[in-house]
Length: 462
Image (cartoon, rainbow, N blue to C red; front, side, top):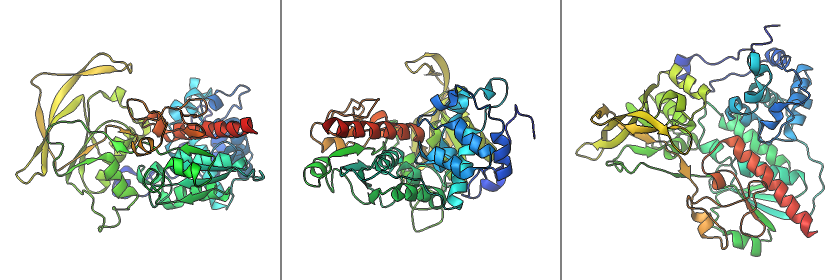
């Protein structure tokens, strides 16, 4: 048994090896390592970690079962609260949520809650264990729009309550941002995401792909003609933002969404028939998790990669783990710098990007110090590809084709935080469609709250 104040280290691929492949970076705990790490948990009487989890997993209870080597029971406990444990164990920002409030972390290192969740979910998958539901069908039909984390969570929770649920997905594959946005080396698609989707389907949820709600069918048609008595909108935020600087229309400028979708959903890294930029020198603009994903993907496609971000490292919004991995792999960070123009050659292809240096001034409305340009500090970086990773907003298609559905000035659907209720009767919404781009686990939390809201709606009519 090691030092109880220090977490059990987890195996990873070596940086110079993984920088050339798309296999998963983190290799996960062995049974012995998981049991040893679980033994560090203090099993607090007032567990702050549960309050720090957006889907309220009974963390001490599942960790106690891991410690006792009862992995199936641990999975059963997690599955009561989470539809996607193998996903969350990989991509959830535990350091700012459950692990961030872990008592162990006050004087030592927090318990590796996320890595233990991943271990349990992977063990269950490898042993053919599925989530359980014994609820009788209640005769009510609910439509869920979008098969991302909020849609899958809402659908799974409603199915556990006896509802007949159908998910409508615009793309040809199920999973939303889990399949098109997060790279294979962080979240394996066939091994992990597809298995989690199958678990949701095992609860009785039906999924129809290639259905673009707003074009193939409207919400009003689903309710008036197809017999759905309630609808949950979990369509995400897939509309990319750009800077509006000169040269942004040049060939070789991509949104991170497009770049990652081609690579992840269409497996362009394996299939040369799917066009994707394989630039020799790539600049990624932005500092969030999506920027790290785009940068690390471009690196694996053979590029030298620069991340240009207008604030300092302390303000990088990406997870510390992702920044650490990116640096280990050789990505260059150009901080306190901001693009002012994209330069192109006579044929309209990117040849470079003009940058201005920044310094931090007074805090803005977000509480972060505002970046201010340093006059006369412009210089150029030579490159052949620029990837813009500046956030996303919801596609306006659903709201524009649904009568009585209120949106705000950012194009987000207006919904109550506590239950996802919108301005349209029996229509609920949650996740990025409501908040704008956020994390997988926050979208799941919103899906969970909306499922409770929909259940309460039906019970109020009974």
